[in-house]
Image (cartoon, rainbow, N blue to C red; front, top):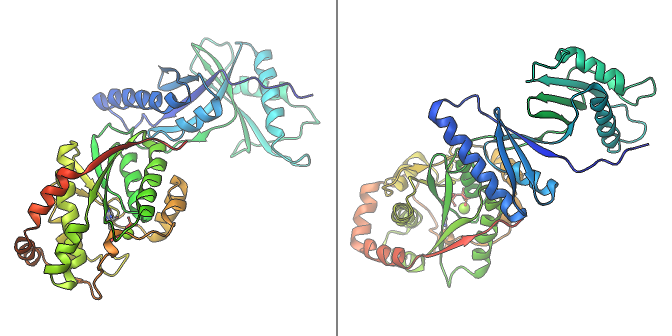
Length: 400
Ligand code: ATP
Ligand code: MG
């Protein structure tokens, strides 16, 4: 008979504290706890306590959703739903049986999954060693008819007992988190977000290294329609699942593109668009106190992504430019985009403003000095100031 499993008493959250030293560690932990509160807030909040290098969470709302939100919070290594048991062998065995019986429902009746018991003992007052206790629990849980095979290495099912001063915790599952550093521990970045596959993955990679990411999107009505605007917002909603509510700056880009089309050599158009995006984004970055621009640029993914062109584009920025995907293969980026949840949105066919008045033969080795001369002739700086002033800012919330 299967005993009905009650709701878990607590979610145990592990984080990668090993690499951290001194003051970094306190800021990592405080920021992680703050971010977890933020992730739980739309789900009804919860109590979060930090104990002995672990975080314990008691969500107010539905625990499965809370666990998923915690597992999408950067800095989290893994999360386990855990149950309290009493500090004696019989209670641990009873809890183990209930958890195992429930777990076996996920397997077909003829399956023989492998199994082990693991005991961790932070509470050295307990009268048995970890090894002896694990054997005693396994013996108490299993008999000749048990549908599991004991296997110490990489078992399918692992019953864990954590003996701690504040209680005894029993759990089976570990939901992996993204690792990395909690968002905001390293400040803020501004991501140039197109509707493509790359830039959302670049934004996510920067979040994973501890940046809170704001976004800027360049939009060119009437050449580009509403579908592209919706797509950008849908992408940010998915990314907000990972970092919380996010800021989008929308910049009207058509006048700049028209000016470039009317007055610049055709082969330089795309490069000049990109350089203008860098200058405008640098202004916006300073305004929102972002220490870096983030782009989805990649070396050699398309013919025009040469070292010379990347340097020529980057030279127009006066904030440092991070290109997290610079050496990635397209397959790696696609795999990440699927994991993040942006892939399905990115492949929706909507044009990007860079395709407006696209040159037939784009320059492959543009030079910054050559671009600067053209830009001065066109008086681009003045138009850029106007569009920066008119940039529209909005806050976008997670979609789940
Ligand atoms: P993506 O998949 O991000 O579109 P991509 O490989 O197609 O990247 P490009 O189209 O050459 O590369 O764009 C390079 C980068 O320029 C993008 O990753 C993005 O950071 C930025 N970018 C391009 N178009 C826009 C836009 N309309 N708004 C904001 N940023 C843009
Ligand atoms: Mg693109």
